[in-house]
Length: 275
Image (tube, rainbow, N blue to C red; front, side):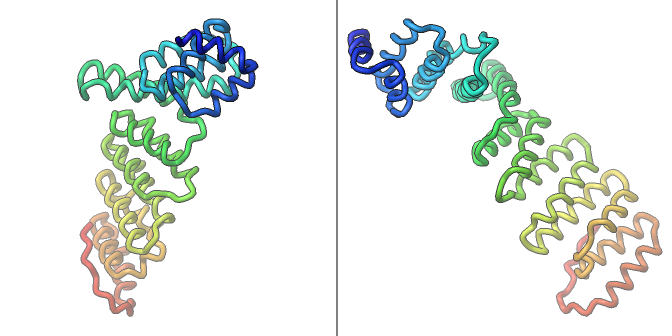
């Protein structure tokens, strides 16, 4: 039946118009797949057709067939760049779908995860919608590829129209887990201009300074002086900085912040932040 239907299609449609018809169609029924299979057998070097058939298999949930159909594409050394990109993206989708067919933390899952991350790194520089790129970043983060996760989160920050502060949090957490306190602090300070309120800005300032305190008090004190800015109008920040200066053996700076604190005429009570 499939072969007969394919022959009828070939008679009714010229080659190019039928390919365009199948591409526009979202259907993944057996008839369209049967036609594409027959056509590919007749023209095995039609790379566009091969990718289209692999995509149809994938859309229909036939993951193994999709990967087997797509595999020969990656042996072509002179493939058009646009087709190569299509194939690489489809392979990533296939690998992600295959990944979740295995039990998490099993040997099969770990092996599939390795292949997925390798392919994700390969296509990470492509242009992606923000929502898809965020999924990739979360996957890299969850799967322990810290370098790739950071790259993807920074890519989101630089390219997204609306920056999500959680992306900065994730990057900083990755740095902290590796003991890179200065890099973590820098990330928190980078988040400050994107804050939507003084309270958020204050929170990221304190996170940055406290991250540096884990490594070097002098670095913490220097950064505090650099990034405090408008937060010097906040009595609780001045108290925090005065105590930090004393901890860093800088009584002169402590006296400076205490003097500023005494000059404050803001009626809001201090919150008593501890360094």
